[in-house]
Amino acid sequence: QAGWKPLECQTNGGSLNATFEGPGGPVRVQVQTKVEPGLEVAQMRQVMITLRSDPDLPGTSEETYGLTRLVGTDEVRIEVCSDVRCGLARLVHAREFDTARRVAAALESRRSDPPYYAALPHLLWMIAD
Image 1 (cartoon, rainbow, N blue to C red):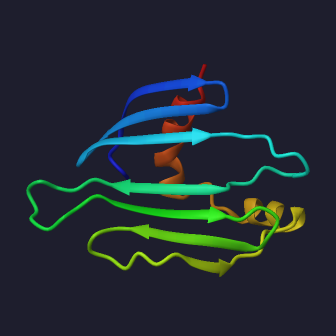
Image 2: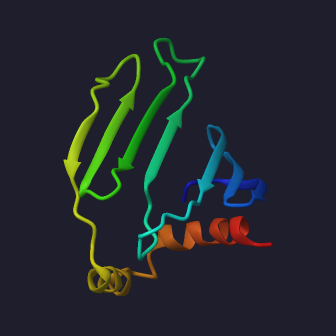
């Protein structure tokens, strides 16, 4: 669905770096893991997406969008870094699910969903030894 083709994947300790060839050029994925004492379950703490400027489109610039979960709170910081969009940081309340709700959400997920099947080979390629 995304049209990505795997190019390179490297792991080093708790990090993984993968590069795909996408329709608009290279797509780089970086995953870093870190053990946090006191946390009982794994959680995603930060997501950053960077869009490069397009030299063929005047007025475009690099843009970064980020979500960061603040440790020990139900707050998530939303950040936008762009020359053409509002860049004010915002905090939103996003309560984490307890174990029972996590299991229920996983069981409700449709495994016949086309994006799931499109992403599965890429995930397996990234985690293969």
